[in-house]
Length: 249
Image (cartoon, rainbow, N blue to C red; front, side, top):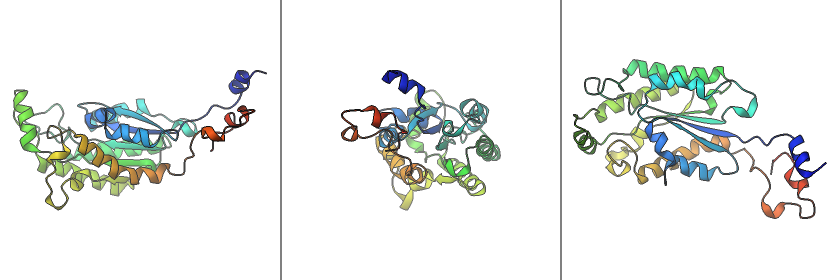
């Protein structure tokens, strides 16, 4: 039997997955210096980091598409960790942005429903990290709105109500949570440098999120092995002895 045949007849190397589920702040996270790209680099050869960010989406739409992204499957097909990062669009003002706006009570219910759905497909709450929306810099975002021919359609105080609702859902459901809204405003600091346009993350904001998310994520993936051996550890005479094992090195 050839080496290729031996490899094909053996067990597939299962690559654990971390799934990032959210709106544009998640979709854009794989851009250079983005928090998702930083996570992918940190977890290389341990996990695949999958970007499932959808620009403009809210929890009403996210709840509908989640079953299309994750279904019940054997073992490692389910993510070892998942971030749920919505609220920046849900918290839009109803009068100014009715299409994206989701009432506060519904936002909370949608987050709960998503956590409950994940449990039903064998993704336990211990693998879930909720992330609150970041604070809104109203002056900067209003400039963006004016350029688009509309009025200011978000307020930081309202975003804070959605962030608090996200925290409450995490407490009720027993998931981890990253309170980005509060952390970026800690000690009344100027948070505008964390945002590129008042709403989305700047390079500094991406790094801030990455650094605060890592401790939560590490709890879920730190025990995972490095997949396949370091090159110096590969058996020189018969590399297949090293490379056709179970990958736990």
